[in-house]
Image (cartoon, rainbow, N blue to C red; front, top):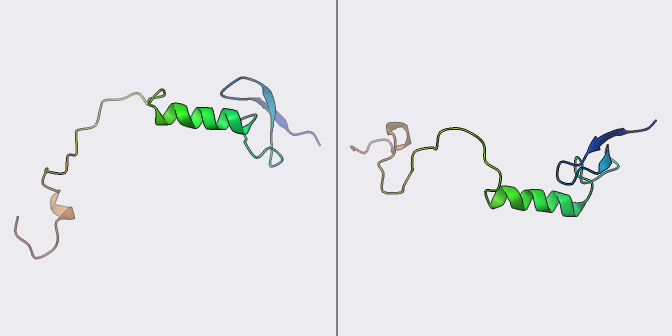
Length: 71
């Protein structure tokens, strides 16, 4: 039985999407690593409003405070 063929998300090469391909859905370790690098360098972003800055000097929310200590 032939496996399902998909396009590599990085380079577009047709590749088998099965347990026989350890890099699925990518065609190679190189494409998988390049894609991870793109996420790590913020080349890809998920659309939406930016989150508020959670700096360390901000007071934690009430649920995160240790019990028995007044704020």
